[in-house]
Amino acid sequence: MQMPNTQQSLGDAIENMNATTELGGGTPRPMLVDMSRSQGGRPDARMHYARPESARVVSALAMVFGTPLSRMIANFFLGLNRAPVPMRLFGNRREAMEWLRSR
Image 1 (tube, rainbow, N blue to C red):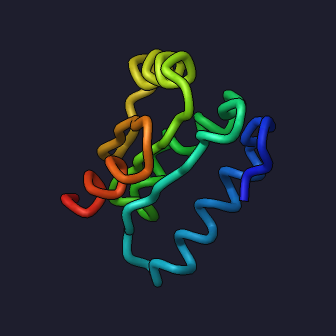
Image 2 (spheres, helix red, strand yellow):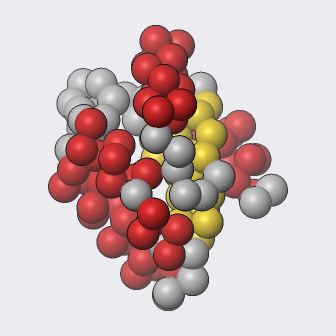
Image 3 (cartoon, rainbow, N blue to C red):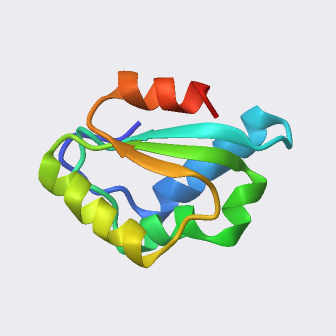
């Protein structure tokens, strides 16, 4: 669980991917990353989610951000680094979950 007002680290991203691998039983599954209470992710954490190997673990990735500014920064990152799976940014969990269920 992300502590309020912290940044997601590479270790956090690795832990999230490992948990998804274990829970998915070897089948790629949708993943929701809620960063609404954090200050976002460090560049190495964002790169970890965007690496090609992620497609073996994650079928779609929804990220929830708490502020329009954090979503804007993340959108800029996505424009530079194409994720290997469908990925969208959201302002709330409900919309993110609806999108993931449609995947």
